[in-house]
Amino acid sequence: MRAECRERRGKRVAHGRRTAGAKGSVSPLWLGVLALFGCLFLSQSASFAATAATATDPVKALGLQAPEEVVEAPGFSLPDLTGKKIQLKELRGKLVLLNFFATWCGPCRDEMPGMERLFRVHRDNGLVVVAVNVQESARAVRPFVQQLKLSFPTVLDVEASVSREYGVRALPVTFLIGRDGNILWRAMGGRDWESAPAQKYFAQRVGATK
Image (cartoon, rainbow, N blue to C red):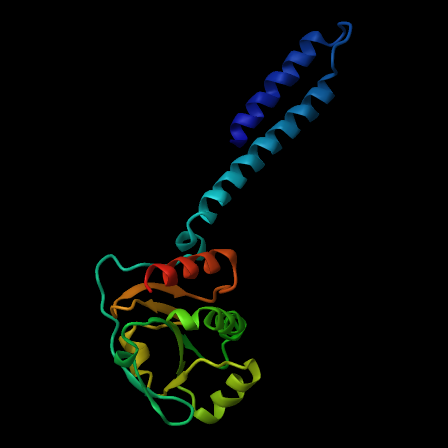
């Protein structure tokens, strides 16, 4: 696109030089300015078209990684902050957003409020959020949960055994587990769970899997 713009600009400026002196002609300087504005318009239009195309596909817009084949989510049984065991198999039939985090992780903290609001919007339609803390104690995690006013379950993976089962090597990482217990996708790194693509995706997913 830029090469094409430079070529058009060169032709118009050259044409201006040939007609410079003729009555009513436009100076080469103005031709160059007009060509430059035309190039900028074409470039911005192409960029907007690409953005619009991505916006229509929330999976691509959110950068979600879907498995190439059917993968069953590894089962687990982990204690929450009260000591009660949360088992993944008991959540079968629900859409489970499984988030691995730590209190010292900045991106984890940043994405949690949006995740909480996403949960509140869709929990009556079968969306469950489970936050898995990696290698910290209940004493360290409890103030974090209270400060952010998180209402979804938070469980403790003190030995990081579940994290290893899911191949977690950096935080945060989020998985979406379908109602059939299979992994739908993985999101590595923080996300804006209140963004338009996220809202669109979960509205479609929850509505399609009731």
